[in-house]
Image (tube, rainbow, N blue to C red; front, side, top):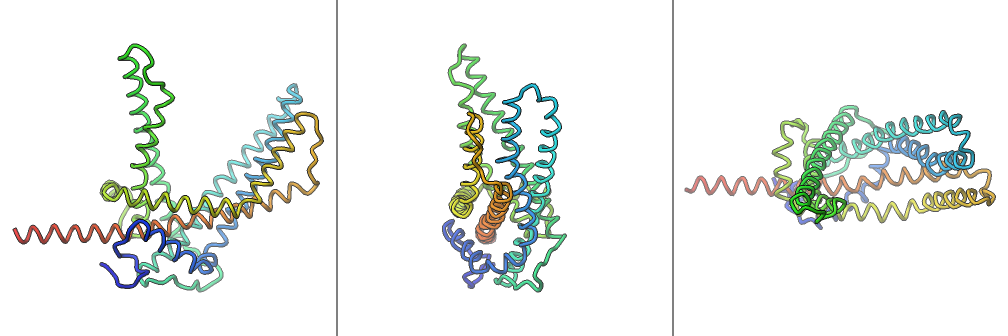
Length: 325
């Protein structure tokens, strides 16, 4: 299974090497990645712009109006419902467009798995409904598993704290501290899902639920590697997106301060073009964010290949031992 090509997927690698190769593959082929996924990324950016503009301008202004004129709250109910409905629709469509953006990269990674190269898109935009649907099923199914695991772990520790307090006759451990062991446990139980999701999407021969438990056990055996890969990738995404999305942070902070000042009787002091400016800045931030998040999947791609090689070597080693007994 191992390949001598440095960029080949199926090679044993350390966590650091997986992150390095994933970032290298992403950066060296960024133009091809952008060309294949810019339309769903742009639609995600539009949805992000809608939600962001509502969050930093429309929603605060509604709250200020309700605070200043509480007698008008019944009349403002329709405005609140409209803001909520628009935000919910934008959130749903944005989520679908985000998955569609990721599916374009998974399609490219599938070709890279076969040829060790990212192919040049044949058109300015290429979209596959099959890959989009498979990616959507993978992310939704993985989210369901993650939610179930989180609920079980949280329920266990909160129940354990309650039992200890009841047995002691007083509050020995504050119930509010149960989140600490919950988070620490989930740090070890959630990263294997990164391998489960990547394997399902890229290996089109398998179905998610029949192989979920076996893939999760494999992920648990390589939990240390997956934790390091995920944490390093998240740090990279956070730093890069924070720098590139800094204008959106500045605009959001300016709107917040202006609305707080308005609450204390100061003039709003914002230019007349603040709404279109905020919309454009939020759209840019959304586009940057969704394209930067792809780094996580490119690093996970190499972690998946490394784990597959290690599992194959382990299988062959056990087979040789059995034959020699």
